[in-house]
Length: 183
Image 1 (cartoon, rainbow, N blue to C red):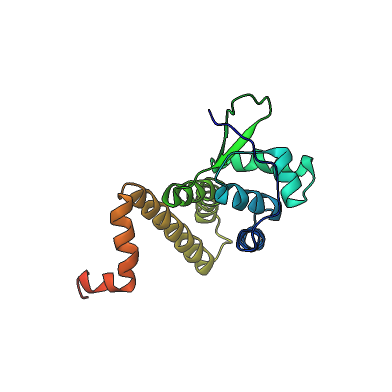
Image 2 (cartoon, helix red, strand yellow):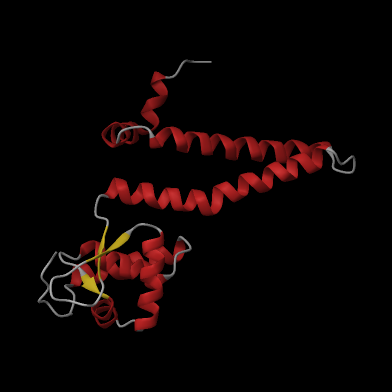
């Protein structure tokens, strides 16, 4: 349990800039700006924050904060924590960047890639049995399904790679090509 004595106050300029920028990026990634700003605030906070404190600090309606906290909790990017002597709910963000990125990727895969694969499989199966679907459409549907399933398989493999090894792989970048057989 944690003790809380701080009340919401003006954010330092760098923190405010990050919160605003993260909110803008969230909008570009299809995430509600308020959700992204709350995530940024909790990520940089050195102590748990209550919804009322978040609303006051960011100037966001309490109802919007509540909805945003539920969404962030659904992505497993924040969690509720008990605070000694408090009846209100307090929240902290996941701060391990690898864990955070893994959770975001898992959520996006579940919401975007998995339904796409289901839809593409159905389209390929339906097109295969329909003589009115041309060869080009059949090939392109199958190619899109193959590509999406390949990405899905790659994602599953990357989940099994330890974070320190994955970091080395990422740092190698295009240099990894020199280790592949030449065709």
